[in-house]
Image (cartoon, rainbow, N blue to C red; front, side, top):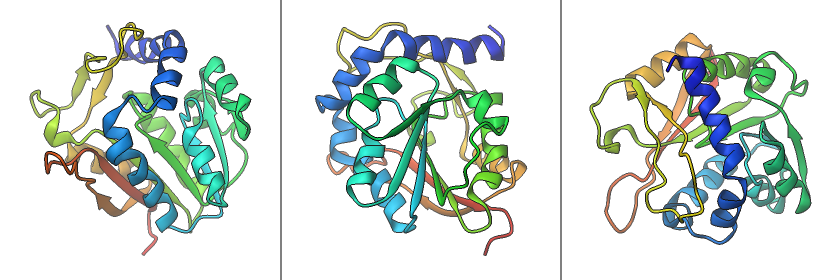
Length: 225
């Protein structure tokens, strides 16, 4: 498959797994999220003391609700209409918007923080999204990305498309989405190319294994000290 076909397959998979994903998140079925990564992303956002937050690729909306409960003004975007319907049913600010539309400037509001929580799975489209970030976060805002830790993917350490897996998830999940793996140096080069500067690198630890459960990048517009 070419890059576009892979990107399309990601969205197709999420359309097919709306109910399974919503049940897994709301039923606390994903142990790494319950024990480490959910709290890690909330803490990373709160540490930057934003007043307004945009969750890009918000899914069923748990992060927007968590941040709203902490007194922040939070909104979520996702291309999957049924996920946005699930999110909206529990209250909050949500909108159907594709990454292509976001990259083209269809989100008109500046915010203090854009969060991408395990939601940057593609290749070229991720670069398009990140190039749009400086205009959204301005000179004083931040972009915070949580992703898989590149040292623990169990495959050759080189950029490339990988086949997804629902291993460890319920049998309700179908057609796992592919995802594009980047080395740490590749991520950093991409950020620089997109006008973003790394402010902080966080490696949340799994207390059971002592290994990093994820990797969190805290970014600002290039040139910010």
